[in-house]
Image (cartoon, rainbow, N blue to C red):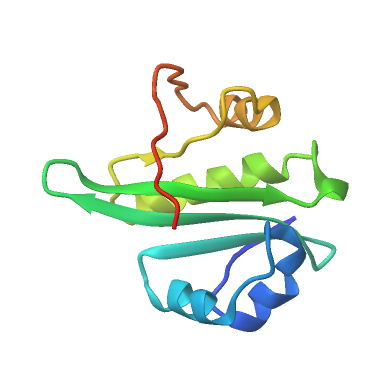
Length: 135
């Protein structure tokens, strides 16, 4: 497995099947243009097998934290350590960039995600409530 930090639109398009929806060119270009946004893709036999995206967030009293925005692994590559390797790489990148920590959210009944985060030695907080506004 080879994990690469992605900086080109072509690489994102080639891995488009890993995302929930086809990557939008305008959003992809904006994401890649910001050095606080990170997209890592795992390749197996030179084919995209999974990805993780992270966004550095900053706040006056917390410093910079890495938000693990999304994690996805192609069904054919699940249960082979791809997700754990991607998380480890993102955590390493967060440390290199001076982040104070990494955080994310998931549904409390998402057994696969919770197992993955446990393997990556995350602290799980089941008392947190996600709040969102959709437009």
